[in-house]
Amino acid sequence: MLHKRFRIKILLLLPGWLLLPGISCHSLREYFRDPETEILAETIQAGITVGYAADVATTIMLGESVPGVLVIRSNEGFPCTTLMELDLNDSESPLVQAGNAEGIAIAGLWADASTAILNIVLTRYQTNSTTIEILGIRTIPVIREENTISVALAGMDISFNPDTEAILSLNLTTLEIESEWLRLDAPLPNDVYVAVLQNAYFIEIQTNNTRNSLMDDEFAITGGGQLIEVDGNAAEITQQAMVNIKVIPGCLLNPVQGTALLKVTGLEEQGFPELGTVILDCESNCDGTARVLLATGMYAASNGRYTDFPL
Image 1 (cartoon, rainbow, N blue to C red):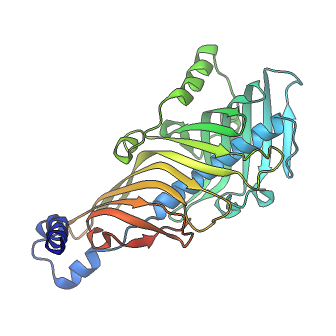
Image 2: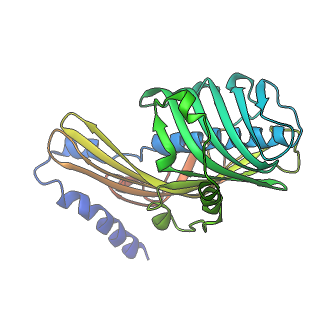
Image 3: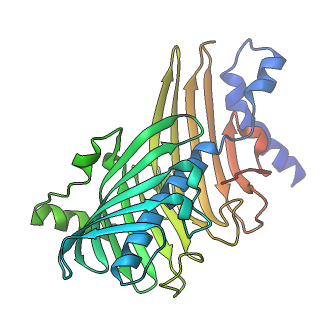
């Protein structure tokens, strides 16, 4: 058994050695590294922020009050349109980091108190890698059924530095409205290799039967997409996927459930490629880490270990 394990490790490391001919031992030590989970954490935080906006909006439409929210409504009955403004410094959820954005504006088109299409603007949205003054997200279908809120967010919905006034105007035909709600009927992937191809994320919020409180609401994110970054002569493609990544108020350090994939393909100015894939298993330890199920390329040394995966 020990001999077999040793052979498996050699096979996992072999592709990296073959791709790096003529590189010094010092360069190799710099090449092999722990997985950079920051991009996964940023996606999770963005999903939580969007989910929280939907959570607040449906809570208000069900007749509950939420502190720090200004609401304008077109009429008392349904269907109706609404405009809500949230100050994230007054967020009732411990999972929402106010530092990521200062506030949220939400335009809603409501068929009834539990079914809506939302346009969202996050003001001064920030990530670890860059600062975006305004991030707009168009036509997000939302359905609330008893204790569960379901949200569908596709990559094509996101626009950077949009015309705020235009994005908060909801002008949809009946066919477009029905098409948006059909997105929520799409089956969720149960495999990270399927999720990575979707370029869409599904966010599910469990309200734990406390409609008048957002403090104990839990979030689960499934989906995947691709990011491309070019900086001078260096370029990097990052693919990521998540299956049922769960975040709860009882643990603010890391996701407590689910599987995540990170695949990086990059070319640095030195001219040799950076290749690495890692699959992470999130556990309920609440210590800011996740277990590495599989790692190849530049992440191969982390196989079988726990790696940092803080929120």
